[in-house]
Image (tube, rainbow, N blue to C red; front, side, top):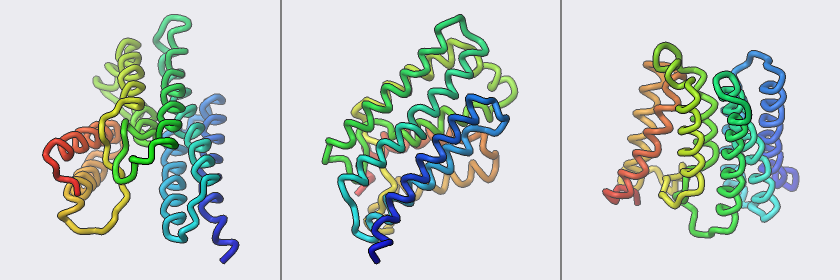
Length: 227
């Protein structure tokens, strides 16, 4: 049982490791989609919180470690991806704007650590969702993919999503108190729609799914559908 107490922090370190390796692959242009490392880090991030609640071993150290790992996997890594995308089509120095994502991610994580009201929902877009959106943009091909590669579009995305990170909009979290339809209408509806899009259209729909996540959160709160 004593060894199990360390399982959540071990999983958090798995999150951090995914982020570190993703940074190396991004810098060295290994040809592996960086989104894969974000997905893996996200799985570890979900499991560390789940096991901490399941084992009832939450601790201040675990909370701080989780934020430090998230800063690498969901703060620095998406910034590097955006930097590389901007570097292909932007004037000198403009690509450095991409690190606004890292700055706002750090602010977002710091706010989360001191705001005790964030439980069933988040204030501001959470860093994993933001990271999934940014790192999945390269999956979009065709005319729309070419449109997204324009520097002014990428700059707009950088600024908008950085502001969303530190905004006070309410975004629902996937922390189920129970699995009743009444308390989880928005979560279940969103998950069903997201699964359908992924199966039908593939990973290129991930940015759309994140936009849908934000929309569902705002609509659910406005219509008071969340318990």
